Image (cartoon, rainbow, N blue to C red; front, top):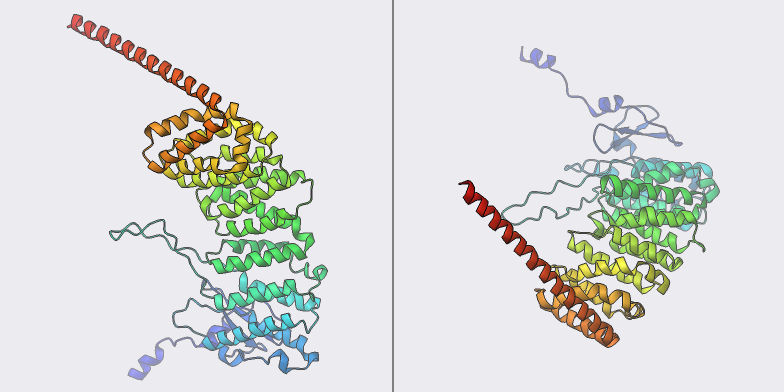
Length: 484
């Protein structure tokens, strides 16, 4: 009776049955075809041989090394290895399933990298197509997201502290990236043929991976995209436009993209190669994209790379200095002191290479802003603004236009000497004051006289205002008594 009851219970599905229920997503050029199950976030690969159902362990067998086969057989072996390496494994599995198959794939990827480096086989169109398929299968995936920051606890955890999400499959991905880099850089790779597979769609999906949380992956992508830009000249306008679109979406929509710094590093190299005179499209790129990149709150994560790009534009065309300075003033932060310090650092770098004519065009709004920075209650902002007078080039520009500049900043210097709470800022202000006296004592005394006159006038106006309010209060009190 018990056997009859147990016989009616449903049986557990075997591995071979599970493989029979899977669907084939594309055949390779070799006798083995790779099968993917997309039920989880990461596709788990299994292999079928000649359409028959067999276990993964029986089919995923090691292939010989390239050095162990004759030259005539290496092309076929390359195709087989590429097909084998197109299988993608789940590295997030805590039980580390398919450990043997993962190691086989890693060894094959290492052999593929060595083979590309050796250049012992000319890459034809069929091989390039298989390479593109293998790279796409491994790299183009759903990226892992950053864990939600924990709320501030009693222990004092910072809710803004970033947690880097490292890619669990990096042991394979690193080798795929290395293989792609060697393939693009190889002299055996004919750009005219390879561009059919390293096409716009491939490049666009590659650039989407710059949003990866893993800094190691973004570093690999930066090197590869730079090599693609250098080798495939036909893709250059498209790559610049795609980077532009990523920046637009980041600035005006999301303010969230992990690879902004890496993309700016690539752009720094691209800008250095711009021909002179600069094209109008490059100047528009500066105005519409580079300068608005100062707007997002996370500027500090990519400011060094952005500042380098801005400086290169000004070095290419010194007339752009006025445009850049006015752009910085447009996006000048009001409540973010750390960001304000970054602006002052970049402003100093721009002013160092600014010509007198461009400086004259923007000096009035510029020094009004510097005057506000001098009186900042955040000592680092005031200190950074005062450090401008330590730069000989900037001091020379100030000396040439001292009659316009000194009246703008003199009130700020006097207020600092009287009221600023930080002793270092107080001492720096005295040093700047002495430098201005040495520069032009008569002008300094004239500014001091006008400042005292305006101060006296302001005091008199304030006293008149208070007297007016007192009279109004007296009238209001007398009317209140009469009504009562």
